[in-house]
Amino acid sequence: MRTIDQHQDDVAGLVEAALASRPSERLPLDPAAVAADPDRYRRRELASDVVAPIDLPPFANSQMDGFAVSSSDVVADASLVVVDRIPAGRVGPALLPGTAAPIMTGAAVPDGADAVVPVERVEPPLFPAEGVDARVAVTGPVAAGAFVRDAGSDVVAGSVLLPAGTIMTPARWGVLAAAGLGEVAVRRRPRLLLVSTGEELAAPGAELGPGEIHDANGVALAAALAEVGVEVVAERVTDDAATLTALVARHAADVDLVVTTGGVSAGAYEVVRDAFETAGVVFGSVAMQPGGPQGHGPLSVGDRRLPAVCFPGNPVSALVSFEVFLRPLLQAATGVGRPRARTVAPMAEPAESPVGKHQLRRGRLDADGRVALVGGAGSHLLSNHAAATLLVHLPVGVERVEAGDDVVVWALDD
Image (cartoon, rainbow, N blue to C red; front, side, top):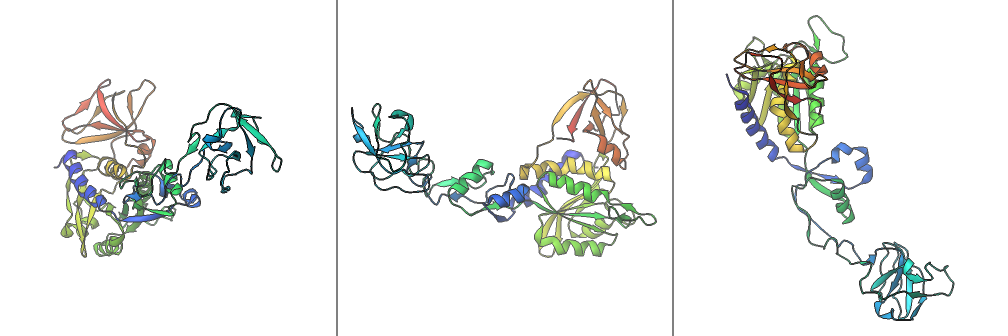
């Protein structure tokens, strides 16, 4: 029987290699597209270096509302003739000697000007009405370049604006848009084929036939995968190996990973084992409860070797297996969501555990910060798992813990 650590390492090697070779896709830099599908833009990774096509700013512009002047005209007792205003978005005529042009923040500094004087530093300290003959006097000397944002002072054209591997944030999306880019290549999100297996499974909301149960795993795991930014193709199949094999082949070209639930144990109708064992997937037992039966390996599908991770079918087993073996890898790959908090807390009550297995019980912290178990150890107790906020670890070799004993807990509600 394998340990949790051994299985974690093997699954990590399998999954990380697959995620490292994901292709890229192009996203438009369009606020309407971001607003319509914000999750598509959250924490995306650049697929290649982005080179600045233009300077930022693209032209010298005014840092504030004021007057564009030539610094050489600003001498003692000089008064300057006010000429036409320059609003943002327009280019004014060349500034003549002895004149000052009212200029707005962000407007292009005209030829002949090399400084901007804030409006509060002129006399009178206001913009004269348009079309009225006026003069202004500047109080104090003015240095060339004062309150002027030079072209390229933020980004120089031809420089690497953002390198490959950059995780995109709002400011980084903004700088790409400012540089005039209409779209950018990002690494595609991990895309996963999720298959619930079992003759007994009915769709949620469907009327149950004799011996049927509703498929909880598909919905629960699809939601868990969405929380860490994974694209999911969800399917459900009966206990027919040929059907499962054909289903995987149909999606193989479009996904990075296959995850299944059910059909991995040693019974007579183990569809996943029947379909995958001869195609490269290894099945066995991990010393954990729930979630002992597991499968993993590179699944040969035509000319592809597609990583497959196979969980048990009981819903708590499937969710606990996801938390232990897959969620940390996917969350690290996408950067979406947060790693689960892990800490130590005292037990509020005694508990027993099979000494040869690493038991993962469900629990909550009570008002005193102690771990109170929620429900029993059964892998079918999904409502208890839904009420819990912690996974409580009782490792191999621990037969019993007493009230007050410290245990390792993982948060389930980060």
